[in-house]
Image 1 (cartoon, helix red, strand yellow):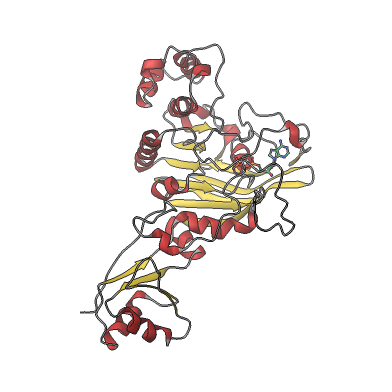
Image 2 (cartoon, rainbow, N blue to C red):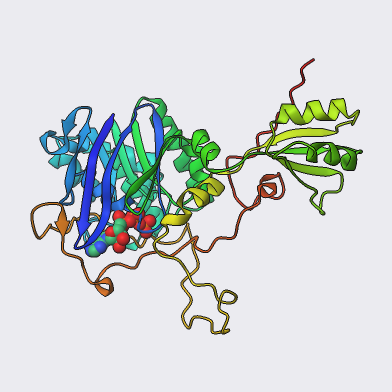
Length: 391
Ligand SMILES: Nc1ncnc2c1ncn2[C@@H]1O[C@H](COP(=O)(O)OP(=O)(O)OP(=O)(O)O)[C@@H](O)[C@H]1O
């Protein structure tokens, strides 16, 4: 169990992490989400005493600094390519193992586990980002720790690798471990995570289970299909607060919001309307994320066209979001030594910082119909379709 209390960090006048308090429970995967610059990496560094700030993090009741062999209790990967430049992957792990009293044979075990046995005698500097991520995970698992803290571990992995990572983290969680993982791959997170910590501009937005997040920040709707759709639409529109949309691309279908699924069925029954389909549509994690964090985006891409009455498009558009692209967040390991005590570090001029990803900005409003199978642009947890009948 991780207990983070009142974590905070400022860079000059800027508050990067604003008194965050949360728990990460064992036996499940907890996803850590937030827009670019929300403070995820800084929070993780604070948790691991890699940054100078305020607040406290306890790992099963103990501070990180009091744990004798941290590698045997907490496996962390905050920077995908933080490896020794001249050692082979195997020797890198053997060296770390020796420093923590872990048998050298464990290096081969974890390399095998992450699928890097064939390249274990190569130097990691030649590794792709995906291979480096695997090696990072091997390093985190070296001491068979109870807790894993991973910053964007899916970055650079191919679809098979992402699938593999999901299975690995879920099975490690099932063994009773505590897994705290950040990712921008929301569709992946929706499949992987049980709990979420969502932050924006350093502040807590949501802490709870994934379904609760989606419910809190999106509106579910009801999909109805009927050969008497027009008659049903008329009956539904008579109910206060109900909105009925008749999607042109789906003749005979109605998308109804502001009413429970059961009530739609009852109105159909009372109106003598035959139904061919009645299904609750739940929005995706991505839709919920957009809704929850829309006001906390810090790095917002300019629109090329539109929204510029004078017609002048910005000269240098921001790079498009590439969630599977190379990590470009600030380095986490080795940590930058804090230059002054307290929770404030002088702000580093922007040009001296690693590039920040600018992504998922200016996202158009998302329509719930997009969640329907075959129309999902959202890659979410999927559509929950249930038809209940009182008889
Ligand atoms: N060394 C630094 N000097 C000044 N400001 C910094 C420094 N490192 C981070 N920040 C600022 O702190 C805030 C939080 O950054 P952080 O990297 O923790 O966010 P993040 O959620 O991990 O972002 P991303 O998703 O883009 O990796 C950002 O506004 C960032 O600009």
